[in-house]
Length: 142
Image 1 (tube, rainbow, N blue to C red):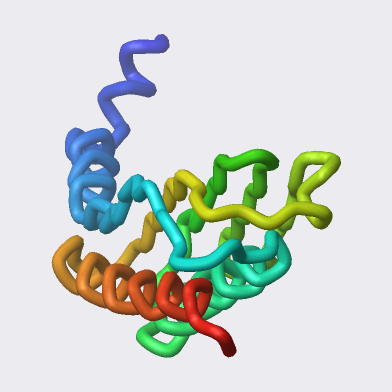
Image 2 (cartoon, rainbow, N blue to C red):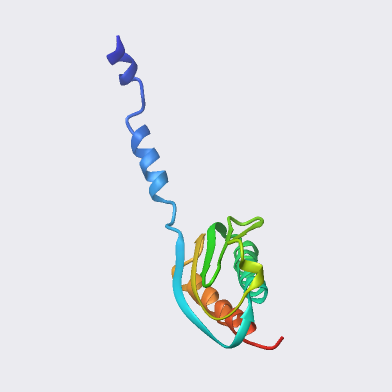
């Protein structure tokens, strides 16, 4: 009896599911690590503001092009640590206990953006240009 039920199922049903899943493009991934050295001591607040703006810019770029943000993450490692992340809506900000109280000449910065609907090249170009502008904002007197 169970064999009869299987005979009535379309033979291509499993194949169709595989074909649909293979049509989804891979996400574009931008991931870099930088050791940043500043000309003068900068505040943790200034670092956080500039990097939050980078996340906002990548998020807005994706939205304006109808791309889907998989995840945007930043980790700043220095005397204290900062974590920023977004899945396309709000930006989650976490930091170590003494984050708001220090100034530094150097930090290690890890950034990753995973965006669906664009190419790795396009994401890389936008992310890199905006990241360099962000780093310049940190090191400027503005």
